Length: 320
Image (cartoon, rainbow, N blue to C red):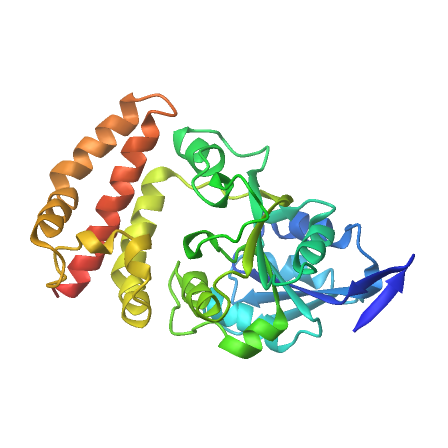
């Protein structure tokens, strides 16, 4: 499905936007996708309203007659994996572009998505999140956006990225890849990990086929208080991480599981250190250091607290 415009072939893209209680960003997200520097007849926008209980459905009603946008409603909240799968199953494009409903895409977002995937041997590409101007810039937000904690660490965008940096909230993949490895795992319904699980399967088939495109940018309109994020991480590691670890051993290196004191096969000293890191004492020290240290010194406290919550949640579930 290709169309030539000014001598340039533009493949058809399917932009998949899962949405749940997105009333404060939904319209801005859609307007950014409608106003792309990409031929309007060469892409579609599929919004999957995943059982929202706020004004998201009312906002989407405005777009019912749009030729560019299709809205699909789930009758209840089924999770990101199910929402993205619904989008994939209703897509017509050769390229699937995933962007979350709290993202506001740069006007060249689709152009860079497509041009990155046009390179030989490329099967997936991840973009760069930037903070929305409306976000309060506390120490945790600075850590998220300015500390080069993900693919931003990589100096050469021509080199493949490792598994841990392939995050699907702002990404594009060739549909043939999904045909090869299958859909998102819908057993993962709570927050976090559904993209890691699919990424593991993609990397097993195409280990050198995923890249980072720093020009493929979107503003992220989602403020996350640090203590709320720590609760999310604990719940993720308790309920979703065991599913990931059982299916994919490579997850161990991404989520500190070599230090999990509940894993019998881990070395004794690793388990001892993990036991210490997961204690309430270390958590309180981490929170104290986070409060008193300026950015970027506070990043060390943030990493310690993330490790604390990951190990605590994972082993709490294992020891039930």
